[in-house]
Amino acid sequence: MSVTVELLVNPFCMADRDSETVRKVCDELAVSCEVLNIWDIDDQMEGIPSHVATLIREYRLGERPGSVYCSAFVNGERLHLNKWSAHLDTLREMITTAKGGALK
Amino acid sequence: MNPTITHITLDDVRNGFQKGFYCCMSGVCKRQFQSNMWIRVHEEVGSIGLLARGDKGIVAQTIFLPKNHARWIGLPTALGDPDEFSSTMSISCLLVHDWCRNKGIASKMIQETIDFSRKHGFKRIEAYVDPKSPEDAFQWLPSFSPFKKFGFAVDGSRVAWESWQESRMCHLDL
Image 1: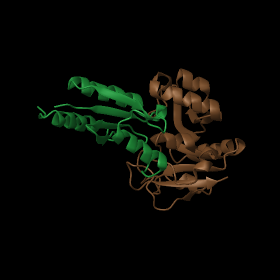
Image 2 (image 1 turned 120 degrees about the vertical axis):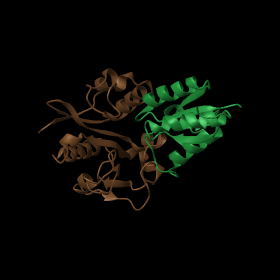
Image 3 (image 1 turned 120 degrees about the horizontal axis):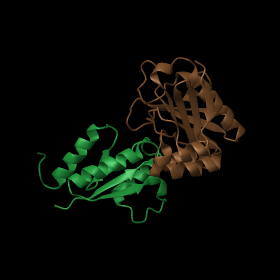
């Protein structure tokens, strides 16, 4: 089953840690990961997946409380990376489920 | 303890801070996602925050940036008129090491942030806080207590921080 993973980086805080660890999880599970830095994304959001664009828009319009953390998306489902390091286990689980398998 | 409080310099950003602090700015120069942003903000504003240095290294930090940038990257901010975002300073981090708390360090950093913001033409300062006392506040959020001393007011019931439902914004008009 096709699995798409995106990482929306918030460059404020734990961006590099999250980028490294999410990539590592994706490598382990043999899925690719597209990394998007919110600082570099303008309001046109051309080419940005709609679920990512929606989150960015909500933040920028103040429709959603703010965050200093990054977000990962697995087939469009968001995982807020705010529970180190348990969120990595959740990410593995989400990817494995999306691939149609089960965690060993 | 009487730590020295200084502004974070461009050199700090480019070359990294000394080790020993647990938060987001330690080793920032090696962090590809952050360093470019902070250099740009620093060049625009003249500072991105404060460091408190004691005998054993950095004991506290404050990070601030204009609200238009804070909102751009999704940091906690209050609602308000977008035309006023660039004249609002957003305190996006205020952390004091556990063993250095209740010594007035946070208050000194807030005072310096107020002085700097006023001097540079900002009309308002915002910060996200835990309204509870310092002893009961969530580990990664500053307590409202030191802000209250300077006349900051808590903004209504809107949650400030997505990860902490009890968080609130507070502000001070300059």
